[in-house]
Length: 86
Image (cartoon, rainbow, N blue to C red; front, top):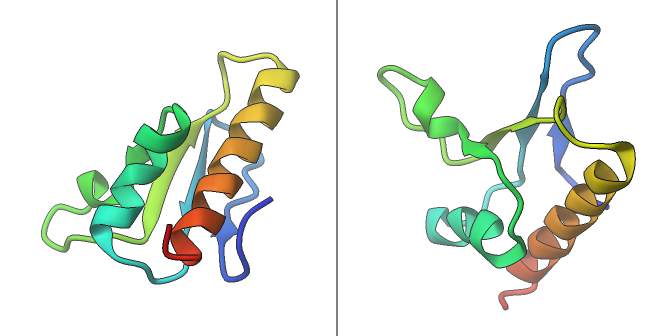
């Protein structure tokens, strides 16, 4: 669902995925949540001294599989829109 260049962790435990996006502008990135109503925390809040605008932490512990799949679909749609300059 995500654009080329997006990577994510493959956790063996825990409750979160860490996403790394292709380089796009910060305002566009912050709109990913707002545009598609998917909860996540931008990665910049996890760096004590360096701001990173290419990461997001998402939680997958409290949703059924169908809602997780829909959230991923929405995020992918938002990433494609941002990449297309929409």
